[in-house]
Image 1 (cartoon, rainbow, N blue to C red):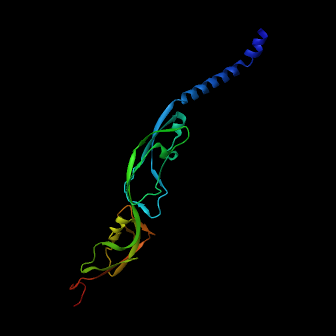
Image 2 (cartoon, rainbow, N blue to C red; image 1 turned 90 degrees about the horizontal axis):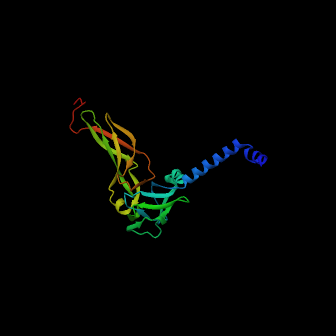
Image 3 (cartoon, rainbow, N blue to C red; image 1 turned 30 degrees about the vertical axis):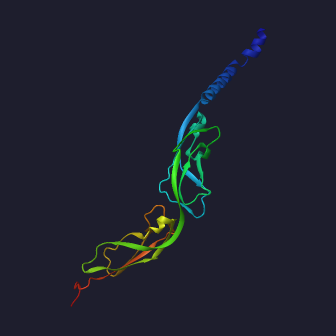
Length: 228
């Protein structure tokens, strides 16, 4: 019996105790990690299958706060990119529509459960897409030599193409350039700038630089610089 005890129990006892300690520590770590944890992530709402000629006409679209629950080790590693909110717009038509946000629209990693979605609903408006050309109106600022005034301002190109929800595009009168400072111009000068439309839902199709040429002339009736 003594030989058995020495051969099978005391042999490499230190190594056996170390292995046992590591096994117990690992078990405790895993057991502790099995407790559920929760975290909230803020993610954008993704729209899929948008009809070709339809535009979202709502300026403010909420983000979704998704609260998920699962093993602590998974929750700790969760990133916002791991959670997706998808809304199917197939069949959407012009007008207003309310969408429900439920766990069915949420795509989350395995072993995690969606326990809350905020907001539970959101409301957006749709309109048909309209593309049209609008005039470019340059903005010129600056001070000039006494007796001179701005005689002509020319933009090239003189118009740009814009696109967006129909009602908002129809309401645009013209595009405006960034302010051009023509201070000190004697005869004429050209400046490169850009044109924009302030409505955030309207896009400039093929945006590019705008050349603004400013021509100045003597004020009518002025004798400045004249020998007469």
